[in-house]
Image (cartoon, rainbow, N blue to C red; front, side, top):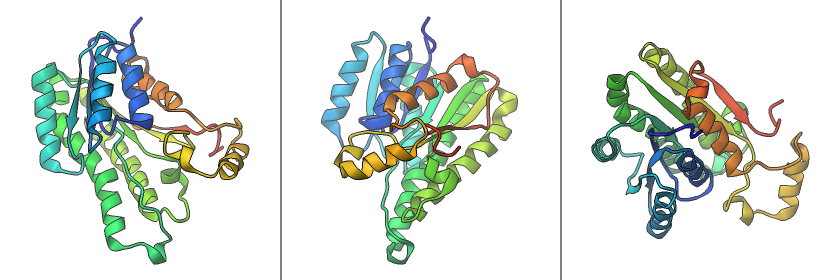
Length: 248
């Protein structure tokens, strides 16, 4: 059984890591995929081709989720091309880590804009369509850091904690129209980004996790699949920590 047969999903920041994992698993489960990317044109073309090869309809859009106008434009384009917007995964995000005493105002503002304001922009952009359909699932990517904080990541933690408060408020506002809003908070996920880290440091992190391993993009994608599908029809306003037990 394909859990997302006939549904259309928008996934932001999908050309690598977690976003790419979500796009692949959603497509395997029958969803049509509209994904965004900021600069990696080649990676986007490759992903588009790969997803279309699975027999669904997929299209990449170069769009800056931090721009309100571009988000509106994207939603209108997707609706015109695909006919519906059933699932929104707000995954686009950046880090600009530094201790607070060394963090510039620009580094704070940029992270809030890309990570948090993008969630507002995209949710606003799809809201009218989901209200008309009287159904929809919004999945917002937070982080274990947004739940417990992290030294050197005050900007990132603030953006990811903000996503949690925003998502719970949206769940309360839109629940009566059968639109669900949930949060996934990944722990240490091993992606292209973490491959650049020192192996000893990574090993230390793995040992501190009860399941004794880092997560994979697939671990996050499977959780998103559950939240996007009708299996989670009675779940809204929740934060799912997918972290191997880090927050236990």
